[in-house]
Image (cartoon, rainbow, N blue to C red; front, side, top):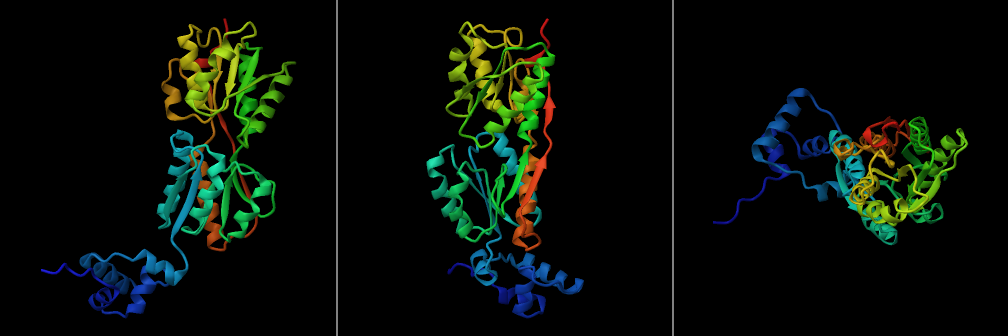
Length: 332
């Protein structure tokens, strides 16, 4: 017995009593019809089990109804939350989201973005590419939204104020009695310098200067690896501001293995407020960088660009929120 033929647009048109052109316009959202006609069309599509051929649709409309989102590390809950926020808005607007994980490898970034661009209507990028290397991305002719400020004409950006976030952490640590404060950063990240600047400004108000140390990767393993060098010396800090929560968690874990008490011997903080931060022992002080809202805002900007509703550069700046917890409890 030959396999059953899948229903076609002609079958839908016949079942609904309309032309194939009407079905096509309805499926692609190009025109509204009377409630009666739209009801018949919906019932015909459902009863026949018709599925739109996305490849054929893109050939007709010139659109894939798909957006690309490139993140540095999908295992990092901060980026997972960005994806969640962006996908929520995309689904509401009948778009698909194609995610690419750069895996913290700057050398692979351009290749992956070029491959992604040909399959989508626009891109959201959490990128470490230098500004001077972005001309090729603009030449591809697709709208792009970046996470983090881009000082270049025509750029659409979404960011949370990292300077303000680090400033709040610095003031909080000073108020809890800390004086020897180290920034455990990740210099390869675009927003690392603004976090250091915010912390430096906050400490300067009390006549203090942060020490600096760096991780090779912004991961728990990265924080764990630096614990001995940072904490087992005569100049041990009494507080460490980590580049993100993952680094802070790795540092906390190794510090406790070394017999260092948190927060009695050293206070530890991070950025992002990932879900596990609240469940650490002690719970981790951090700054909520509003990850899901970043994803939502970026997707809204991209939709505006694709629809021609906005052609100008946009810079959406979100306000961070300090989340004080037990890892920075006041010194006795």
